[in-house]
Amino acid sequence: MKLRLAAAALAACWGTSALAGGLVFCDRATDITAADQDRMLRFSAVVKEELERSGAQVALVSRAGTDLSRFGIRYSHAGIALRDSPNGTWSVRQLYYACDESRPRVFDQGMAGFVVGADAARLGYVSMVMPSGPRADALASTALDKPLALALLASDYSANAYAWATRYQNCNQWVMEMLAGAWGARRGRDEAQQWLREQDYAPEEVKIPGQALMFAGQFIPLVHLSDHPVDDIYALKMRVSMPSSIEAFTRREVPDAQRVEMCYDTQRMVIHRGWQPLGPGCEPLPGDEVIAF
Image 1 (cartoon, rainbow, N blue to C red):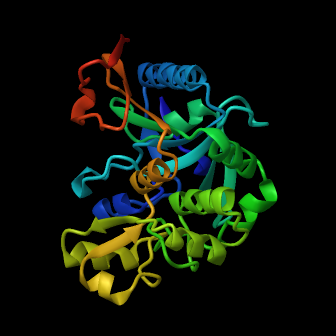
Image 2: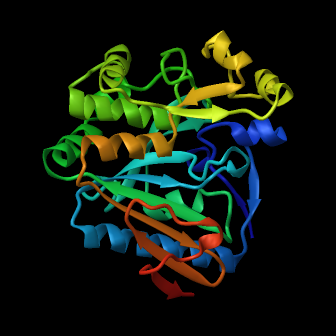
C-alpha cells in the first residue's frame, strides 16, 4: 500500500538526505507493502518487550531513518521513550517538524509509529540506552514536564542545526538539551548549552564530501548554514547533535547505563546487548539473539 508519512513520523531529523538527493521533508510518500508493515510492527513489539525486560523506566531511543551511510552514520533520529507515558507504555517523546504549521513541535508517538517512521522497510535498526538510578529518575520526570519540554523547544527548525547555537534546533539537539534540563537543572536553551559545554559534550563532527554538497544545503528547505561557523563551512564539516553523540555522552555520564541494539531484515530480527555496534546488513554478532520472521 502507499503510506504517506505524517509530519510526526518524519525520519529525517538531520537533513543529509536532502543534501544528498534533493529531497523535501514534507509530503513524502513511501511505498510499504502489507508484508513490510507487518514485519515492522512485529519488530516494534519486540522492541517494547526488550524495554520491559530491562526493568527501565526511561530510554533514549534512536532509529536509522534517513540513509546517512555515505557519511558513516547509522542513526539519524532520537527521542525519549517513557514506560509511564500518558500516551501509552513506551511512547516516544520527540521533536518533529509540523509541515502544515511550518514549525517544530513536541510530539508523543507510540513505539510502532516510531519504528514505522523509518525510511527502510526491509532493513532497519533501533538503538536503546537505558540510564539507571537517580539519572533515570531525573530524565523520566523531566521528559514528562511539558512546560520544560516546551521551554527547551526552539521556534525555528533546521535539520542540520549547529549544536552550539540557539538560532535553530533539530530533534537530537532537543534531546541533548532535555538531558541538560534533567541532569543539570537548566531551564532555558542558553543555560542548557552552557552546561553541556561544561560537561565537555562533543557533538558529532560530520564530514561533508565536497564543496558542492555543502553549499547545496542553502537551497534545500529545512537545511541551513547560517548558524554554522564560517571556518566549519569551509572545512567541510558540521558539528551537529546526533544519536551517536547522545549515546556517548550518556555512557560517560551514567557508566552503568544499558544499551541494546536491534535490527531486522526480511528474514529475521537480531537483538544485540552491549556497546559494540552491530555490523552492516543486520548480521548477528556472537551471542546475539536471533528471531526468525
